[in-house]
Amino acid sequence: MTQTTQKSAFITGASKGIGHAVAQALIADGYAVTITSRKADEIEQVAADLGAGARGVACDVKDPQAVQAAVDAHVQAFGGLDVLFVNAGVGHFGNVADLSIEQWQDVIDTNLSGAFYTVKAAIPALSERGGYIFTLSSLAGKNPLPGGGAYNASKFGLNGLSEVLNLDLRDRGIKVTQIMPGSVATHFNGHTPDQDKDAWKIQPEDLAQLTVDLLHMPERTLPSRVEVRPSRPPKK
Image (tube, rainbow, N blue to C red; front, side, top):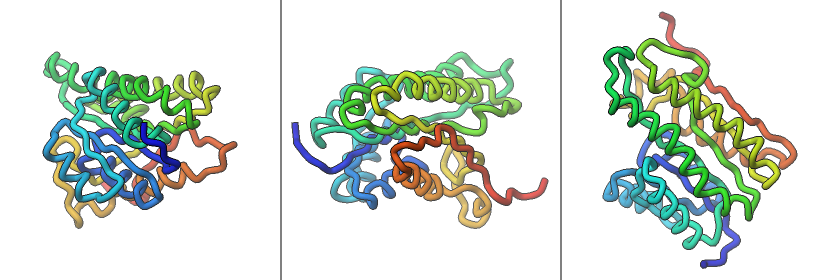
């Protein structure tokens, strides 16, 4: 195993958007990072663009064996793990009567089961260094919306999982924060960010700054849930 004193982070769903912005911010803060995506060529190119200290790994979080292998490879490469940012997520929306079983399974298996698999794989390494887990949830984790049956269920579940993780892992020296943003200017659900039309939304770099700020909180203090909203949403 490579021995290093440099801190490191493992970020899922980081080819673009929030995960990519978090990777950039952590590298700037002195971390080595592993970023993951389901697309090998895409994530490898993104890692190359991020520069030294970034590894790109193809990994589908719905596959627990693949997640475990990716985390183990990170620990082998960097000698340990300090930060886990659970970000990979998908959304299928529609009336429950019309939502397919396959769509339901894709959302739950990615957003909730995938989060569990990722955390489970990382606990041993995080325990060694007293690490930090961030789960990227949503305000949809407390506010139901029409057509959000699968997505709401996954984020309500992720919030519950995150709160239990705090109770289960704090004696291991692991912090857990669930970040719950509202509208963010990302590619989520097929959206193409527009610099002008999306200017009112939370930007990925805003959540990246929040993540770094939380990491620099005094050790004795833990903001366990952070709700983030656009400060001036457009009037309806």
